[in-house]
Length: 227
Image (cartoon, rainbow, N blue to C red; front, side):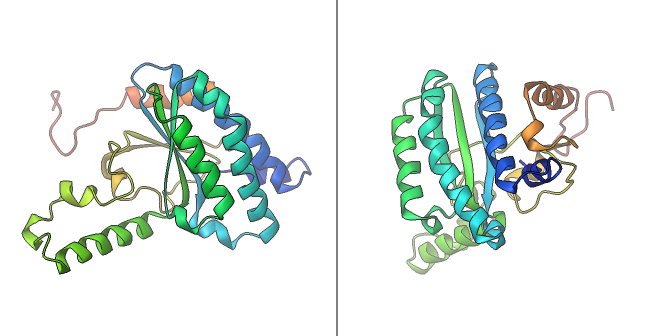
């Protein structure tokens, strides 16, 4: 979800105003995804491990905004039967933020229409390293052997062990890279890029991406029927 800062700066506003407006886009997209049949999972890259490098004031505001999002959007999630969860090194977030995340996850746990996952303090390389450490601990304890580590088994050590791999990854604001997002899981994901800044991203942009996805042929290394 890129472009919040640029959206604000282009309007002569503080960067934090772009983050506030970005929440409006989240609400629209989540509600629409919950309405669409067959769309079961939505992961939003909300705060990367690299984002700690931003000015302290901006980081503090983002943490406050995250707590506010959990409280304010709970009613919307319940209304649309959205289950809330997270991935990332959540233990590295402030205690009050972790409490809000846990409370929201608990209150929405029984919802079944859409799973909304926020990637927080997340980095794909860090996720893979943490997974390797888990394997190493089990291997050292004699609980798993080298030959037992398959791709399928390794995936169970990742933060996304309960989720399917993404079918489509959308990146806004004209950026054309993955930026350490779901690197293992994105092996066969379709990528869609748009110059639209995230605070301006609305349902019509979502449908544009979904329409483009629907026209692509996904072969997973095989040969298509028309080849």
